[in-house]
Amino acid sequence: MVYAVIFAGGVGRRMTEGSAGSEFAEMRGSGQPASEQIPADGGTDIPKQFLMVGGKPIIIRTLMHFEEHPAVDGIVIACLPDWIPRLSEMLREYHIRKVTAVVPGGETGYLSIHNGLMALAESGVSGADIILICDGVRPILTERLITEAIDCAGNYGSAVPVMPSIDSLLFSENGETSGASYERNKMFITQAPQGYRMEKILWAHDEAEKRNWHDAVSSSELLIGLGEEVHLFRGERANIKITTKEDLEILRANDCYRNFLKMNEKQA
Image: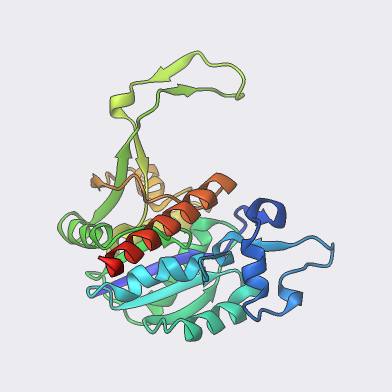
């Protein structure tokens, strides 16, 4: 069996109305109560995973890849607590049926993943089952990435999609000066979804809890920090994580391009 843990909650960065532009108009037009859009300080603060692009929230775009993949049996989402009611509405609105639980996110990405894993463990998921871990802001991931993560995790116990670094890398303690560089051909950028056997990722979280280590940036960093090796497979350059205004612009451009291709196909 294959289950996905999607973390769409925790501290993280958010995008403001100034950086997200017209997407907020789309959100307002979706019927969402104003109280969920405008906090008490008067500023608009919608978590990036709920921003609308082309009529769909980013979190739904991400979830649909797992919903439509034939090998994925269930999905658990760790969500910002205040946004769970809205997310539940979205799941019904967009017919996302594989979600078995929505749990509150934690203060860090690690803790959000932990909450999702605990929900799966309580539901009786076996140690041999495959767990896919993905942030909720990966709306351009592909079926190939999910399939390979499942296959590699089944064969090796872990599966981390990566892309070779195409830029030179410098190390700096202060962000102002550097006296060290890395060999570019040995540097890789991690992506998601990452895949793990349930027994392996549960062990890692048990160890992290014993050590009170709650701030691992990713599950691969967690395993490596515990002395484990992880298996790498090739990711995809387009599989971006929506974190900055520029990422959002790339997503919009990608959406426009795909719509253009579809329109041309219909006319052909």
